[in-house]
Every structure is written in structure tokens, then in C-alpha cells.
Amino acid sequence: MIRLTLQFIGLFILASAFAALAIDSSRSFAAGHVILTELGDTAAALAPNKAEALRVAINGHWPALLERSLTKVAQLPTFLGLGLIGALMFWLARKPQPKIGYSSR
Image (cartoon, rainbow, N blue to C red; front, side, top):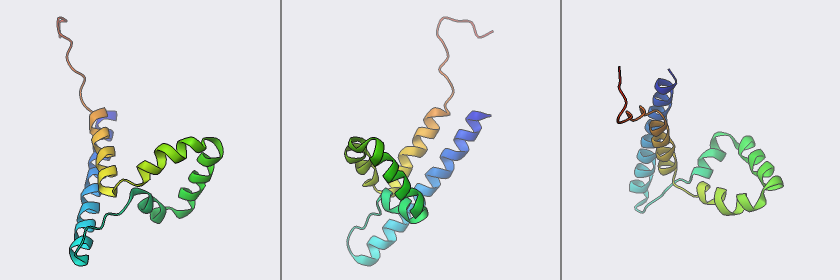
């Protein structure tokens, strides 16, 4: 049941990544140069109050973490960030490898 749920969520996130890629492609085609929407901009557009509250909370407790890693993650293109999260969901939902040398009966 958990595996099915993870696969469904992963598929939904991968579909969102494809939609973000299509949006960026159409914007790039219309502008005549490459335009990529950053993951941080997308999160700020979807939930502006939550994104700022998260930034303040992390900056208060772990300012080095915010400067080093989270700003790099926020600068990823949206389709790439969502694609990585969707792939992670599918990786977590995979079946365990059969153990060699043990009977399956």
C-alpha cells in the first residue's frame, strides 16, 4: 500500500516536472533565448508566506545551511528539481532485491 502511494505521488510529481519543462520551453521559444524558472521562485509563487517563513526559521537556527545548500537547491530549474524528487519517490517505492541463497518458499 505504501509502495503504491509512493508511486502515485512520484508519478504526479514527474507529471508536474514535465509541465514545468513545457512551460519553460514555450517561454524560451517565445522570447528567443533560454528562460528557466528556478525552484525557489516557483515555491515563492505557490506559497509566498510559507516560503518566507521557512527561510526565516532556517536562517535563525542554521544560517550556514541556508547559505550553502538551500540557496543552491533553490537555484535549480523547476523541472529538474521536481524530476529528481519524482525519481526519488520511484526509487523508494521499488521492490526489495531477492536475497541470494535463501529459499523463497
